Length: 181
Image 1 (tube, helix red, strand yellow):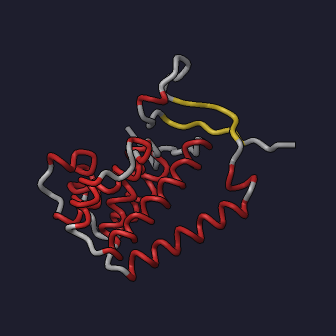
Image 2: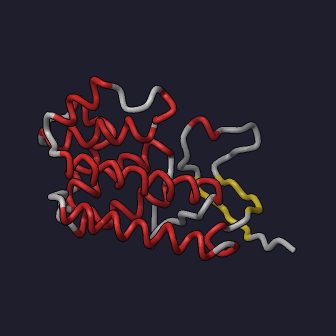
């Protein structure tokens, strides 16, 4: 017998999720993958920890890694992962101004050359079905990062995109924090 959990998710998703019945709160019964098959989720969690170690060992600091994690999660419409990685970004010293500029990084002057290259790579990995990582993106990013840095960031993108898919498919809840007006 399948066990289902009931989730209500505030209206934080991308427009592509919009349905006629959607009015700000989605309430559905879904299989919770991490609870239904915990071994697979634990393996993904271990993979994510390995990716974090690879990033640290290859010169990708927490600031850069969290900017990438947030951007992938925003692009996928994963409010749950955005919240987790915004919290980690704040702990890594990223200020509100930088956080609010991530979705508009191309028009913003707050990002370094390395951050801009990482954000571009994050988009290529998140939208991998749109032709993969183009030669232009690969060349631009490759002119900024070493092979080891490129590999570390690529694995970070793979990891967060996997988590985004689990969370979005399961419609993990993202309730309001504390008192809100």
